[in-house]
Amino acid sequence: MFEQRPTATTRGLVDPAAARGGFALVRLDPAPDLADLVERHWVVRWDLPPGAEFTQVVIPHPNANVVAEVDGFAVHGIPGGLFSRTLRGSGAVLGTKLRPGALRVLLGGPDVLRTGLVAPAAAALSGTRGPTAHDVEAAGRRAVDAARAGDDAAAVAAVTPVLRAAAAGCRTPRSALALDRVARVLGAVVAGELGPDAGVADLADLVGATPRSLQRLFADWVGVSPKWVLQRHRVHLAADLVAADPGRPLAEVAAAVGYYDQAHLSADFARALGTPPGAYARRCAASRAALAAALGPGARPAPGTADLFAAGRA
Image (tube, rainbow, N blue to C red):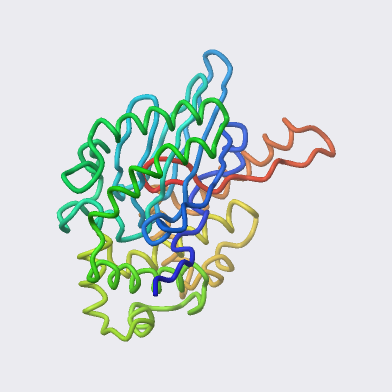
């Protein structure tokens, strides 16, 4: 039985205080019959003053996305590094965040899991057993139009039939078993069930596997290793803690997310974000101060968004 637990957090947004003035994000549940493949849908919309622009950076999750925007409808694999997007004017995007492993199910063999993959949705989702390329392109256009009009439910409804048709021709007992095993591992990581210092062997025990067989499972179906998943989750947690309290001692942050010392946190953090945690803390402190000044005395910030869109995003 497929385990419909979250396999990705809502963390990953770099400098969330700065993001609050740049865009709005809405998350929506998938159709129940697609919950084995789809983590969630998301809509991002923005309306910036003339001449203004806003660049958002995201620390990706081990998830692919199918994204409909004015420029086209495309499938995005896991990025090789950070993802950034610059917004100008006004607009909206609908995205579908796939569960880890779902991209392999929809697109075929493990070669589709290469980092940085971007493919037209019309080519990726259509076929003799799925929707036509015309159907996929039309669904993407309807989704963008609905998102721009503020009708999030209609945007999701536009892409659901083509996702359903594509999935119907791709599921197999083998893929169902692989997705279930991956979901059990990712669900435990996201829920923090194993504690902050969990290792690959602990993840393997969840599905009755050896570390080596778990590594093969993730290589064949997800595209990143179990070790990558653990390190990325810890970096997400650390970035979240630093953004929420930039003055918190980094040694405390390191211990809270499962690092033996601050040096190991700093190395993984800088590798993922391209900046050390101390510099990131100063950036977040400045953004929080600017946000407080913009809101005025006594005002409370709107709830922050935790990630953005396209590959590895909301």
